[in-house]
Structure formats: C-alpha cells, structure tokens
Length: 438
Image (cartoon, rainbow, N blue to C red; front, side):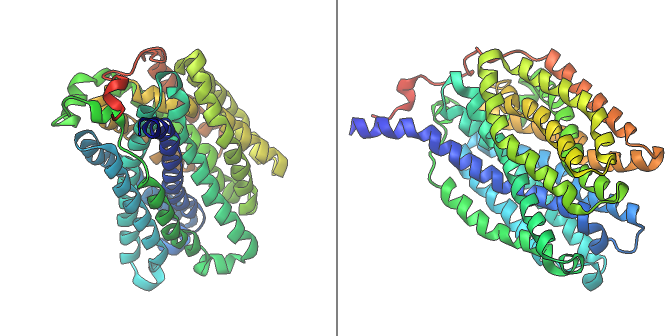
C-alpha cells in the first residue's frame, strides 16, 4: 500500500501539469478566438452601420470588456480558491468560459437582432473574462504547489504554454476556414464553427481536470484567509504593484505582436488575412517549446535576468517589426512575428513563477490573480485600441513601436523593485510528512 501511495504522489505533478496545460489551452483558445474574430469579422457583423475604422474600434472595445472582467474573476475565484481549494474553482472557470464561447457561436448578428446583438456579445465577452480571470491564477498555483522548489519556474511555465497553444489552435482553425471558404461564406456562417467547437473541447478539458488532486500545500495550510482580497492589499501591497508593473509591458507587446498585427496587415498593408495568420501560427508553435525552456532557465539563473532579457529584446524589436510588415513580403512578415514571439517567450516563461512567488500560500491564488489580471486592463485590453488610434492619428506605425517601448520600460521598473525568489522556499510550504498520506 505504501508503495502505491509513493507512486501516486510522484505522478501527481505530471497529472496536474497536463490538466493545467489542457485546461488553460482551451480557455485561451476561447479568449483568442474572440480577439481574432473582432479583428476580422465582428466589426462588419455587429457594428455594420459604422465606418470601417470605427467598426473595428468598437469590435476591439467589446474585446476589451473581457480584460475588464478578468480582475473581477480573479478576485471572486481567487477568494474561493484561497478559502475552499484550487481544484473545484478551476472546474467552474472552465465551464463558464466554454459555455460563453459556445453561446457566441449561436448569437444572431446585428442584421437579425439589431442593437440587442452587440449587447449580448458584450455580455458573453464579460463572462469569458470572468472565467479566464479565475483560470490563470489557479492553474499556475496548482502546478507550482505540486512540484519541488527547484523546478518552480519550469512547472509554473506549463500553464503559460496554454497561451500559445490556445492561440495556435484558434489561429489554426481560422486559417483552415479561411483556406477552404470564400470570404462571403466565412462572413455568413463560417466564423461560427470555431466558437461551436469549443463545446466539445471543454468536455475533454473537464474530464482531464477532474482527475487531479487538490494542492498539497493548500491542504497543509493551518488557517485559510477569511478575506483574501483585503489581506493581499494589507500584507502584500509591494508584491501586487511589482506584479502589475512587470506584467503590463509583456501584455502590450504580446497583443500588438499577435492581435493588432491582423488588423495592420489586412487594413494598412492591404494583404490577405492568411499572411498574418500563418505568421502567428508559426510563432505560436515555436513558443510551445520556448516558454518551458525559458521557465527552466529561470530556475538556474533567476527569474529577473531572463525576464529582463526578453523585455529588452521585445522593446528593440518593436522598431523593426512594422517596417518588416510594410514590405508586404510573406517571409519578412513571418520573421517579424517569430522574433517578436521569441522575445515574448523569454518574458512569459518565468513570469508565472515570478508573480506567484511574491505571495504566501494562503493568499497566493488571490494575489497572483489580482496582480496579473489588473495589469491586463492597462495592457492587453487597451493595446489594440491604442494601436489603431495611434496609426489613425499619426499615419505611422512608429508611434505604436514607441508605445510598446514605454510599456516595456514600466516592466523594467517592476523587475527592478522585485525580490528574486528563485532560491527562496515557498512561504508556508508544508513539510513532506504533512503531505504524504499514510
């Protein structure tokens, strides 16, 4: 019996990593699918009475609603994750996200329901944001708390892999539909297929997620927080500000490099959608390998050096990114996106452990979620909107490159004020005897 228990305990981190990776991949698929659809079709289908640029801005505004909802989701689900446990909350977030995405696929357009259509679109986007707001912190905390201290960077990076995996899946489905369908068919009903597919994918994710055990470190906590949000604000204010600052620039760079690029290539450079979509596909595929590699590297040399190297690389590359897109050459566009996503992977690989390590076990779900998601409002939510407005106002993408530079400078400030926790034991971590069942 003791031997079976030991084998079970040793395999638990692998099962948690797989469950977190699959779950976060599906949730980010849902989230990115909306963003891609906002860039490609939502302006025409839900805001057809507005000019092209205004319609795109309104579509991105509904996209931004998801980011506004994410901090609320982080607070709500973080509260229950720190109070009653991580596992059950992650099941709820997956169902919420998948259900909202599936419903978008059934939603009538403005031509059928008038103003009610965009209103419902915004409401469903809000539910998406709530689900994702609770998902990230729980998935990262679960993987980090199931593994050893010496592998926290690598273990916590696996939920981060869900971002390019979800992006890859969303872009891949859209690229396939774009290849086999005409523009008229895609605009008519083809865009619905990826959203409806989410219903099947979520069932797979739930089946996998139900197989994992609760976090051993959470189980071993003597006393859970009664009001996690208030305790985070009073006990970890510096950590919260550090997490937010470090996150903002990463978010801005990512959404400019992977989402705004769709609008820029199709609207400004006047190229077909597949030019940008294929570039994002290749870059996202490369990130599947690079993110865990950079996470593992941060276990050896520290979170901040790896993170900072990525931030510097992304800031410099932002000034080569748009000139490469402007060439209209497919290879140059692929190069622009791939190099940008390599730099982003260097930031994103150590980011999960970097943020989660700033908070103690009993407040980690709430603290990590708040720091990560609040920054998303000022980063990813506004990045596509600001980029569109900057190019419209200045007539040049150089202003967007400067915007990325400023955002990444803020990330550098956050890293400068952070504590390096790579060699520190996780606060309130349980002893082995407290975790292993007799």
